[in-house]
Length: 320
Ligand code: NAD
Ligand code: UDP
Image (cartoon, rainbow, N blue to C red; front, side, top):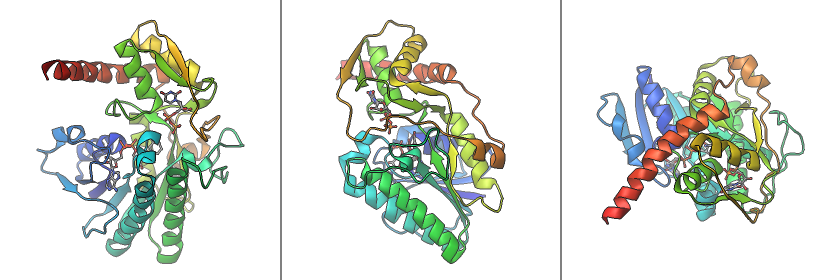
């Protein structure tokens, strides 16, 4: 198959490119390098089945493909709040352009949505039929509402134009190739612990998240893309139900790094959700999917990646 991956040079997109190439597909990676890096896909550039296109999803593009994974969008709060208007455009116009392409070439399209569509959830764990508790005018709205509208567009193109759509609601995912400075909690804590800095816990640290290792996530979304079922167009949660407070996560990171850590408490960002945990029954039933990599194991792999990178960055700055 010929598969388009928008945001293919980012954290999740690059793992997806790698997996789909290894399975014998032709992969077109489309990215504007807003938060993605060439480095993430450099090892794929010599593969004759791999093509890199520098393009912004805000603009239409003509390509012939069988499947589209629409992953393009900054995902870390620091990055998506840096230029919030651009974030909305990426989610909304990106979805319209990719859906238009899917409609024209009759490709199947999967939209990367997010657990953020549940906002600061009043039901716990979150099931797909929960409509969420999202502030429409806050600092996180550009991302949350952008993704909610992308979901709306997927459903409307499906109902109105019979486009073959899939929606995955991704819960916090971590692993190698996260940016060391993108502000997400797992990369922050690991890099801080490796450098011997204090771990920055926001607020009391009693808010919770559920962390999924990238390989489990990629397996889940590939299964969703290729699954058939009457209600397959409705959203599916993919995430690891293991729920941790940020204080507990800090301790897990300390264990994975093998160092004593110190914690400093900083202000809690606006609208920071208090709790988050996926109910994955739907993924389990439809896709026979569940995560296999517990946090401690995934953190070890991620620490190994960052240990190399932090070392490389230190050497590079020592030379300049
Ligand atoms: P990322 O920032 O590493 O990757 C996003 C990629 O999209 C980058 O390569 C970036 O350059 C590219 N991009 C951004 N705007 C673009 C535009 N206008 N045109 C073309 N390319 C553009 O983030 P990620 O963690 O890999 O997230 C990938 C997708 O998964 C995003 O849609 C995100 O919302 C979703 N998601 C991720 C998580 C997570 O925990 N990682 C959770 C929920 C949802
Ligand atoms: N967080 C933290 N310290 C950090 C970065 C984040 O305590 O250095 C907290 C943040 O307030 C949130 C949780 O960790 O409660 C997850 O944050 P992240 O930005 O990774 O993801 P999201 O909030 O989008 O789920």
